[in-house]
Length: 202
Length: 202
Image 1 (spheres, rainbow over the protein chains, first blue to last red):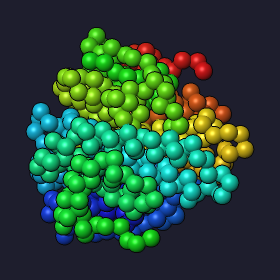
Image 2: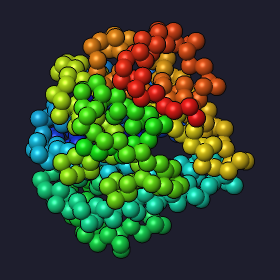
Image 3: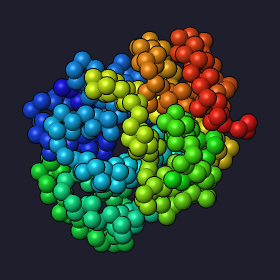
């Protein structure tokens, strides 16, 4: 298999953590690509015309987006990362919560990356940060049981989202208002899969 | 069940089409809510702190986002909308293709809705439109087999995406370069589920 990926992308990191946690590291070649909203750069647009990453090539087809790729890899490994029948909807909602944090964090980062100075619109960035803050508060209050359960895709998504906040939005302090989430992340970050996928220094 | 929804949202429409196609219309109450990136408005942020819609309340829990809600409703109805084991990864990738078109279309719409005049940045809007154009071309060339197969979630996603282009970006002509996709959409739009969920005149 071949994964079109970028070392700085939280969505690609999520896939790479799943690859490692399901023991498929030797079966997937990483291809580093780069692009933005305004320029697809080296993105494999013949495989995903949206010009977004990650994209997995497997069985002669292109599979995207990250959530679909994770499901594919988890199915290949028959790994129990979606929990039991009774847990699965909360686990999928936890996964969507992590993905939503990533979306808003990227919204903030892209505001400055793709727009010229003078066109950075603070209410959009603060609107995204409000979403993130509220979601982190919800995770800290209501989701510790599932975060501390056996490994599931929701944990991986949330951990990659928090890692991205540290990587790109380190001027924002997410920890002090969310001590339980912060302690959980500290412990989750020590997993080999997380250590192997830390984004490079900017 | 209760669905927090908005009549103009393509992601909410996708869920509402699934509800109708799986015969669950009588089991779901719709609650109309509204918000934007910069203001959560009447969004149920106690249920989804991200302040995004749709959100489904079922079995005493909040389920989001739209892709997770669709999977839940399809599982409840034991409907074959993910196809066979061999089809499922292409069907999920087709679903992600429709979702990606919606994301980029919303990117264009929100550019003008939430930013003041003079801060609408054309390269972002054109970047999103390029993603949409490339994806539509890909659908027209490579996905007709699955679009014309028995009903699946990928078709619903693509149809709601195209409906949104007609609704909000009707100044852009997506049809003439994509005649096969356009003919397919014409026929798919005639389904009762699509007719019952046409967005209101602006």
